[in-house]
Image 1: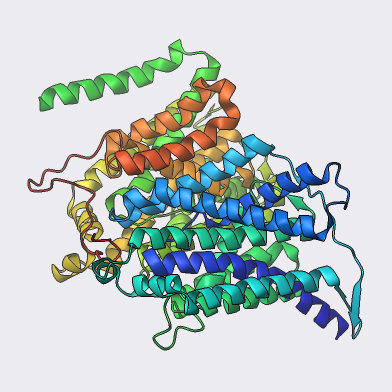
Image 2: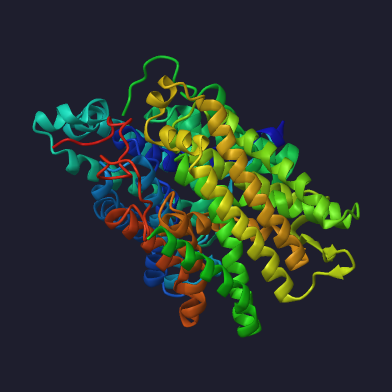
Length: 301
Length: 323
């Protein structure tokens, strides 16, 4: 039982990362029907920019930055990466929005390669150790060790997701996003600046992915320029699992995938966990491409 | 004009046959690699160029060929030539296995599924005992013709040159056949193609299987040339590089794709100092190509008259923005 619970909490943390990245996938997909292959790289970029800022401010890696400083770095990083997301959309995707689908997919791969190897040139190919470490202490619930850091990460992810939901449901921008997902042409006739909203979508997607990136950097302790590739694929799996284009679906999909992977790793061994994720992806695409929440006409984003 | 073209092609082939006598061992090796890429890109050209299905896991078929040959030759002591048809069959089956579930899906889902499949094959190669785990298979014997053992750099150059010429011929002939026209039709407008009586499912699977067989052929020769293979050679990056060569050269265009293959291999060799920059440059190149010249360096010329833009896709307009 204690092992079961332990795995559950570990899975929840990973699942929260997946959810945050899957949200970006699903939003971009919902609005312009593009699979943004480069999305996982915003996660990587978040981890690296967070790393750079933290190293700069904390000097030799002491914890003297304080919680406030770390929080500030966290937000600044997310905004920088969000702007990078807007830049990528403006430079690489916008000229191709009306082009054949194949072109824009290939462009996305090009963007992904560029981001990865630009980071490699900038920060080097080796693993970087994150300048701050999380304290190990925590609670014990029925024999399972749950650190405060884990709880913190889960709460933080949940806050971001709730914030996103509120943004999409309550604000006029969120309304515009939902409208564009339904009918782009009609929206531009109604005076919505479609390009601006698409830009905003990329900002939010990259913003959330960067949040996941910096959190995972703190959580795992090491980062690498290729870290976005596999997790991008997994997050896509999560988005499909929940029903692509569906915000709630992406959150649920991420958590489910995180848990399945956690238990799978425990029972099958770590070397098969990627196969498990891709297997789920392929099975879902074949048998239920609309995902868990796709049965009815879902609230599309 | 046509005669002139034929002559220059013949001249090119003769030059390719004489070249090894003039080149040093280093450039011969580079040229051999170019020819491997020519074969691979021809295979992928069928899938992406002709049929318009984005395959991001093409290196998996390369791996299937290489591992089948390697395992049969080392564990079961088969002759190299006998492993070729077996590898081809395995690759065709693998192609159909990936292809079948994705037939109902939109093209971008297909891209992701092939990517996932490519990763699964690589992970399998790393984890299974029969594929030698992460260190791969080594000590693959040299192929023999009669009593002559193919072992020198030049032997393999000629072997892959012949296969490259054959694959170019096959892909050219296929492209101009009934099947090739059907593939292009599916790419341009799937529904219309089906309405015209084209069996969409069968032809898409055929496209996959043909591409896979050509890829596996390159893999088999790769295995005996290197005499050692490891999962590292069949990564996602390899798939991307093959795709890059096809896209740079011009989707569906055979001479274009050959040029693309040469560029992708030779450019990094020329830019030795910029080793780290290689993939960044390639990534940026992909984006720039798609924005400014999506038809590639040497685009395919279409015989049909009223096509102003050969890449224009007509069947999916709902993602376009009208302003």
